[in-house]
Image (tube, rainbow, N blue to C red; front, side, top):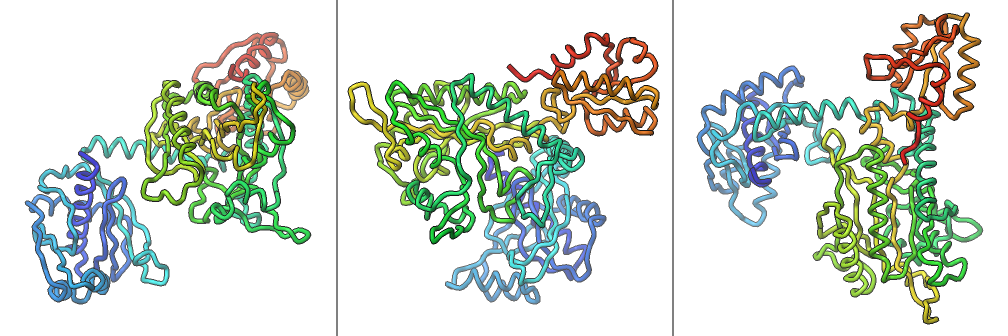
Length: 580
């Protein structure tokens, strides 16, 4: 089905749901029932609350009614006729009064014995609905018209797809997504925590989560040194003038924390690193021989996000960003942007992320007044970005909305194992900010030129990217990234001295190791390590103390590895090696 056909299919099922509810609960009052991304819903006012145990019964009634439906018949009615049909239903009456203000005709749609106020958009033949391809999903509370001052209704959600196979696939993917939910796993594995007394959207990295953050950051820093980046550190607050220069004030003000007044001047907590890096570039004179200048920073940023949009680590207010800005001659900018795309590919392939693509966001032609800068610079930036994307060989799509106010932007999108498309990072080829900040370098002919600027952040923010990785790996991190790489489990107190000595050797070799020397039985210690998804667990008992081979229990494997004691450190280091 095409998207519009699928929308009509799902909206038809909303009618079917309402028909079933009215047969079973004649005094229920209907409100609205639209199609949504994965199905449909309908809101009702029930005289008595219903529970989710009723949903299979309603679903069964829907399938029975469906066998009697032949078509959706359109009926044009006057406002008075509509009010008469829905007498006693204040919700439909409110809609009728609103829709008929200018005297326009209203429409009903009828199928079988069911009639509803509706503008249309249904499947041509209800017989085409597969009775096994929809399912009532859940109940939820919903205020009439989304206003908490209005009555609270009962919303019944349904799932609907063209075939039963598609529905089954969706349910399996959703179940897997719930199993991998980073919020649940983050709590179960002690990775991060949110505390209301600190504030919404401001995560605390617990020790284990902080290990992941540090390892990723160290990997990025090592990689960026190899790729020719220099690191800078910039302040977390600044005078407001910097953001007037960049143009973020007043355009971006709603996404910034309120200013702090210090000695009669307003300071803002930084929401992005770009203006600071521009100032770092401008701090010393530059020649064309110095370019490209690549300035990198895991910079702290804070943005005010509406509390309703906050979502675990995926959308936060405080974030640490894998940011860098590249200052390059305009004629070399495309080649440099291709290198940025290749750096993204390197990271994703090292992490086992195979399904990724790019999306180029251009200007919305209906909102051209929101964009700043010279028209030719916009056209050049768009042309150069597309050239770099095409040269990279990575698949991409183009959308005519979502560009930054000063230039087009390219998003790298990666698909999770559950099928969800995830925006990992935003990158831009910028011909605007260099002029805005008066950035210059001395060209070969002695003239002063403005560099092109590439904004890039392959690993996004620690918060968002680690949230993705938790779900990507289902909490089973590869050994190089695992917060704890090896768990030693002593059989009894007699073997603790040997275990402590051996743990020290492992730690000195650079491995992350813990010893469980508790009074629990060794079987329980092994199970605890498995619950915490520790990659390697080694039991320390009589045989190990006597010098026999270690039996290494590898998480997720039924078969233990047998490794000689003298070889274990080298074997573990090989497994824990950072990606090349």
